Length: 157
Image (tube, rainbow, N blue to C red; front, side, top):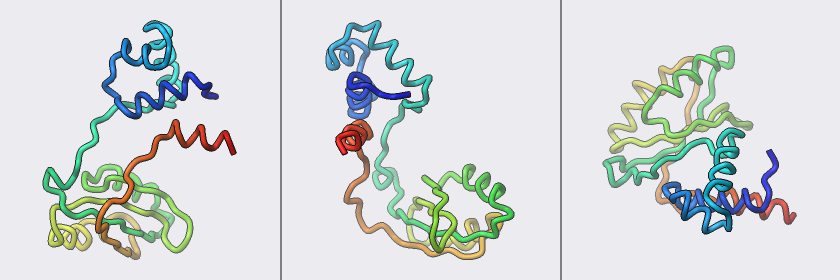
């Protein structure tokens, strides 16, 4: 799906506030409610909008440690590794990567003892894990981007 300027304005508004009403959204982008609703539904059906969620501050609910873990695996079990990662509640994100490691995991734990326990008792036992390298996040500098803004910038060249 190719986004036009109106679609990009809709996406940008929803990125700022996923709870905005269709009336407010329509007014912000210069449409009436029904055409705005139809465009949002089309963006959802095309997979541009994958869903709506609430952003939680992990530290404020007890997860004081955030770490990034490079994982090297025996690749013949990559499907089993990926399935296990998808089920693990403390793994926020997982990316298949190029370079020295096969995957990069972003995880949260309550403290260093919990991180140590997770690395030794859980992560090391996932299918095919050969090696891990852990980096601790000290503080977040930038946490989100506006994909609508990034797409507009990319189109400008």
